[in-house]
Image (cartoon, rainbow, N blue to C red):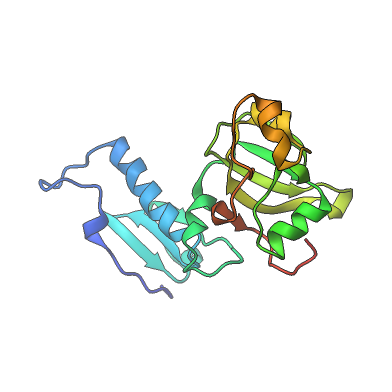
Length: 192
C-alpha cells in the first residue's frame, strides 16, 4: 500500500473499557474530524478506533468514513474556515458592486447590495453569497454567518443602512454579514 497513515487513538469515540459509545459518539467524532480536516488540505479517515491521515485514499482498503480535502482560497490559518463545515441554509444574491467589495476589498456585506434571498434561515446561520448574473457570471463567491433572518433580510434588501430601523421596526445591525464572518470560495482579485 502506497500511503502513510498515522492513528490518533486519543480522538477515538471509545470508552475506557473499549466499548463503542454508539452512534452519537460516531457523529461527534465525524464532526470533530470532518470540520478540522475537510478544509485543511489533508485527507483523513475514521476507522479502527482512531483517525488515520492518509496520502492516497485510492490505494487504501475501506477504512470507514473518509474526509477528502476541499479547496479553499484562504490559508489554513484562517480562523473562519469552520464556517465551510456548516450547513448552508439559504442563498443571498448580490449585485456586482457588492460582490467586488466583499471579495476584492474584503468589506462587510450590506443590505444595499442584496438583490434577492432564497431559503429559510435565522440570524447567525450560514448562507451562501452568490453573485447575481447571467450564465457563467453567476456563482458562489463566499459563505457567511448572517445578522438577519431570511424574513427580515427580504424586508431590508436593497436598502441603505439608515433605512433599516424604519423597515424593520427595531434597531438592527448595519451589515448583512460582517467581514469577520465571511469566508471566500473564490480567490480575491478573481473575476468576482
